[in-house]
Length: 556
Image (cartoon, one colour):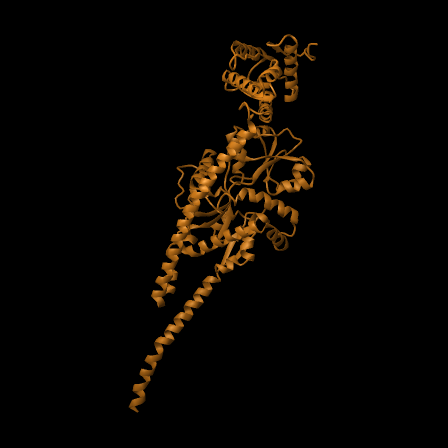
């Protein structure tokens, strides 16, 4: 009777550790599966469209599933609370916001920017091509649609920088319906460059765009965002969601037609394939994947954006963005440590591998960011060079005809609005063909360049000199009446005739001067000055003639 009692404990002692270890491992596996299957909620800014293609493709191509995520993508739109509000209230885990989220951050709200998908904002004003609206200044006295700030911040800041006060506008709440522009219910509709222009093209309504970017307002848009608490509690999940989303965007941009077809079939059947393709083409220009790493954010640019909001009076206090930009650094996950208690060595190896991986990723990211910054600088330099080439005459270095037409249009608008005087001087080099015939075109080019430089050196800062064509030049003189313009023209005429331009070659020039009259366009103003130039030629050249309303025909 004694032996069985002694053997029984011995038998239990051999099996109990194995049984306990097995139960522990089973529990860990169940816990891991539960974590992997945890639902992640993403709130979009608007209705389903190509604007969110990367998230759809990450879901449909299995990138989220490979990262252990089950993602619920929720559309936004009219009547839906703001994505950032839903995020802060805990209704969703991730949200798509605009640059205005920096306002909430500086107000103490725990938002973290993970990635900026669009490097430039798509928001613009759309005006009819048959309107007289060309610049933000032309919006004065017009009916202008705006969304509540900060959604319309880029447009508001553009107005502020151009000195257009809000009380000079007839502000309207946006209707989200471009039909109002077609029906004449508004003069300027705020929309996306990737959306409403397609509809207007389908309606065969010519339009113009006023882009904040052309006035120095260039903000990020469609910024992937989360809460600080979620990042602290589940850093690996946040990183996994970010990388899978960027992978989805990479796939969408490399496979546009496949993405368009899928979005049309499963998410936005009400949008035509042509509309989705148009949207994809426009958004690619804003995302700039060939020049900037997907999701890249520059801290200096964020500070400049915050400063713009501060200048507009939307935020107060010093600009403090510590912790606002996600840096991709993993933090300790206590739950993971508890899961690995049964296998300390395995946990150490796993954590070591993760740490090494993130260290390499961080190093690569820093190198890539540096490379992209250099690329951005080169792009800016290239754009400036292209702008100079487009706006200046290649031979003389003065404004081109296209540029002077743009400047003149703006000055005529100002003259109309503020009753400023505006004068135009049209001159050309006397007997220039003889110079070319006698000395050759190389010398002729030197004469043209010399005349341009000598005239330019004696103009005021407010004056603009343009090579109109051949040996003809135009000088645009804002805030200058006819008498003043004639005095200046006479000084310039004498200056050219005073001494040779090159070697022993002397030239003279004939000048026609006209003052802008209300109702005139640039073409009429140039015509009046040209009549006087023709008169100066007929009266012997090397002289200045002024236009009066009676001078409708040249001297015969």
